[in-house]
Structure formats: C-alpha cells, structure tokens
Image 1: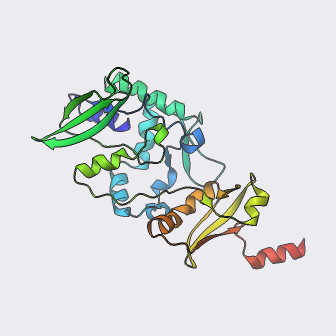
Image 2: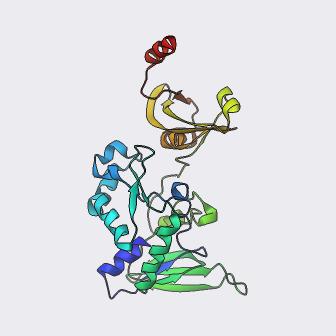
Image 3: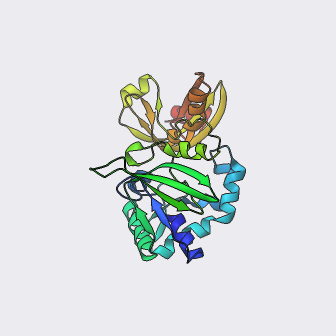
Length: 286
C-alpha cells in the first residue's frame, strides 16, 4: 500500500494496481504489535547494525539510506497519523497515538482511493512470466462461486512483489511469494520460523504458566552466548514466550530447524542488570 502511494506521488501518469488474494487490504497490519501496529523504531537513526537481527545487513542499510526513519515518520504524519514512542520499554518502538492498527489501514486505503489506485481484492497471483519486456501476471479470482478457477491476465512494465512470508496463511501470507520469486530467477534460502515462542519442558514453566515478568533472557548455542534481551517473559504450559523470547529466538530457530541440531538453551535473569554476586549480597542484606 505504501509502495503504491509512493509510486503515484512520483509517477502521476502511471496506471497502478494492487493485487491481493484476500478480501481486505492490510489485514496483517491489524495484528502487528499486539494490534497496536508498531510502524518503525527510533533506533533506525542510530547504529543499525547494533539493533538488526538478520543476516544481510548491507541490504538493510541500502534500504534505510533511501527511506530513513525521518522519511517513514513523515510519510505517516502526512497521512494524518500522530505518532508516539512506546514509553513502557526502551525498545524505541513507534506506534500511532490511537494504539490501533485500524488507524493505519483506514488512512492508507483512503489515500489509495484518493489517488485512484486500482485495488483487486480476492485475486490470487497464480503465475508471473517475463516476456517481450513486460511482466504477464496471471490472476485467479478466489471469491467467484461460479468459476473459481477462472483466470485473467494483467500486463505490467514493473512489479513489486510484497507477498509477505509464510507467517500467517489465514491473513494472506501463505508462502506463495517464494514460488513467484523463484519462478523469476531468484534463489530462496529455506525459510524457518523466527521471532517465536520456545518449546521446552521445565519446572518453572509448569509452575508459573500464565505469569508475565520483565527479565533478562540470554540465548546460548553449543555453550556460547548468542543474544540477550531485557523485556517481558511469559511462562506458558509448553515453554516460554513474550517479547524477550521473541527477541532472542531467531538464531535458536535457525540452529534447530535449518541445521537440525539441538544443543541450545536460554538463561533467565529475574533481576536484569545484576550479577549472581550482586543478587546474593542483596538477598543476604534483605
């Protein structure tokens, strides 16, 4: 949606269309950030490498050099969104002041309609071919009762593939974007779950399930410290969840799912910032 709006602002004569396989635009926006919709992060202004959790840092840097924190904030403020920083943590997350994802989807859709951008809902992109210097997009109507397999073709000079990953099939992200990218010549690194809860039997989780507390969580792989996070930890029946776990789970997931190894664990410090020695002295004092 943002790309279509930016395209219109820079290319007034283009004919622009959004193809979406679901019945409404921006459904994943409504659930991100616990429904509050975290739009960006103020730490984008500082050392990106310190805060980035992925592998291709140079690619990320090139993206934010072209569209920085200030430009992201300006983009949404121009739409009429007043923003605020999350004061409950030092994470730097930026939310709409309404704390509702619907604020973002409504204003984006308003801007799309104002700019006369065609929106094709319930249309799945079945195939893309590049021939005669154009992209030929085969779309299949997913809502048609009479002929659900009826296909139409759209020809385009340029396309932006923003299909999401395979994180939430019910909201449209079913992994089909990987196949489309692959068909156009891109190589795909096997996707694995990331930013997810961890499963593991332990006495704490069983006794404290449902309790959330701010802790310092550190991940270890083959005995080596990997990543650390101070944030909310939620004990669950099956293991551990909460923001702190989501922040440190990426490397463990790659280790378990891609490398098929198991020598990993997490350490929990219930008194963030304090060492074992400091806690021992504190308990003796109390």
